[in-house]
Length: 288
Picture 1 (cartoon, rainbow, N blue to C red):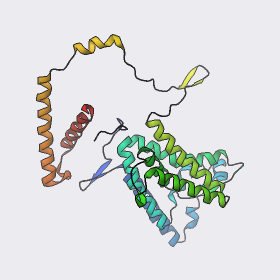
Picture 2 (picture 1 turned 45 degrees about the vertical axis):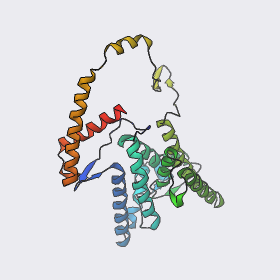
Picture 3 (picture 1 turned 30 degrees about the horizontal axis):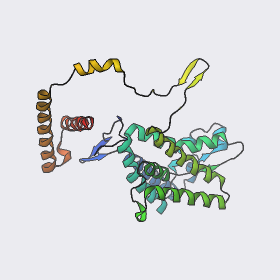
Picture 4 (picture 1 turned 90 degrees about the vertical axis):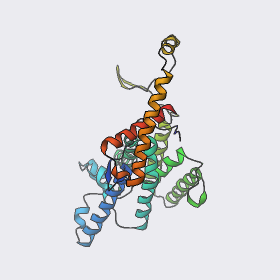
């Protein structure tokens, strides 16, 4: 099925484990699960002092402990909410990676992970904050709902409405408890996810930034059709007979690879066969 948001980023798995593809979303979950096991082990051995160097602390960051901007998410005691977050990253994160590609998905997740500590570092003098953990699963769901708002999800409700309900509910809980830090964290992560999706969809453009005569950022120009090139394009038409022969050859190769997968599994394919299967998929997407 044609995907209107499909980008040209790398859609290949990061690695393969016993014939099963492992994507970036799976690796993120694996890192968080490993951090949960390490956190549990350190707590059981009474080594909580070592864990004290990992949570985010805006005052500590302003005093030079900049690693806390990255390490705050590695402190994860076992809990039911942690398990739910991991499942959400696998389900919705994998779908986002399929839509945007690995590099764009990692850019989205890096923004979700870093936007909150960066904001509180800037506000550290006026609003000191300390926290640990946080996988950004809700923000990933908001990004998914921004792409597929009509898809039924929890309790058969549409994804767009579920995202609005969850963000609104958590916002009211933070306002009722006067928890400004949690409110800023919620709006920063979900806001970044929504803006990123709108930018990838082409519904949000970035202005050009110059300083003072050096262009620091320049938005991509809109594609346009040049009338003078029309005659050149028409003169270079593809031979329909040659195209038909090539299509039959590609179809035969793909059928042979699919038969091999059906008989022995996808793990039986060699690297060259996987590359050929992916190139055929790319050619099909271009034709569509």
